[in-house]
Length: 341
Image (cartoon, rainbow, N blue to C red; front, side, top):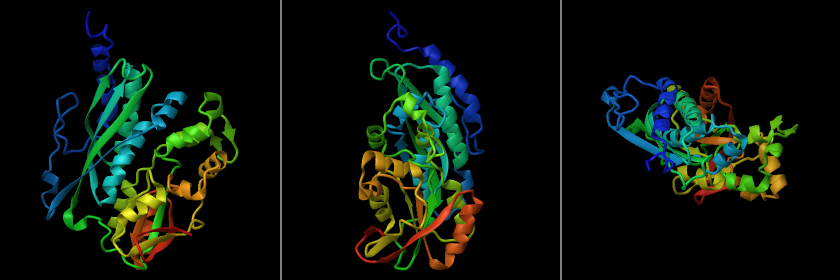
């Protein structure tokens, strides 16, 4: 008896690492001091010594049950982007610049090519965020996961000068809310998605005119990474007073997280186009509108609060970074919370 007969193929693990290296290489930053394969990743802070008070910000998350869709579609090259996005967007909400990322893949059986494909998505997400992929772990766990399934999670660290932290404490009545368009469902609410839609290959491969693509393509679309857009806004000289990453819990849970006491957000639901996947989801599942806004991003993946005088500059900077912005509402005096009007 040996480890391989117990279900763990160490040689496959070695092969996976070799296949990953070409993808990881494109994420490197000059601050990275170690290569892939060591026991830890080292990252120099030398470049940030000029900050008055360099402050680390971190984020961790997974892809959730969207992975079930990836298994059904046998599509593994985009979920890594989702994993990175869920972490680095949270860091960017605090004004942080993502520095490095680590991933964790647990699988029932290590198929090196599949693992490398997953990591290619992680590397692409890191590339979009400007973060280095400096390490990770692939755990083969026979008997715990089915052979053809896996879980994927990650952890990111960023840096910001403390004076530039985005806390929301200076948001006041009359500030303007700018939303950045999402790419679709992103990586939240898939437990409900899988209850609404028939999770069969034939149905997922069905083309819908209202979507302009197959249902599977609409659902698997990776989460937008807003790091460059937020950096562009800051570089334009705009003070971002508050920032909210619209994830699980939708508008009702996430927008109030950036608001100070005594300030309420008002969002005009007709101020931007809601992507058709959400309308289809609501109709097929007979989901009430309030529940949709309490579960999904409804087409807005990131929300900013800025001074009215900065709106035009902020909108121009977001467009320059390749994202689509909308003025979606404003802040008013009142109990902390959000109204969808």
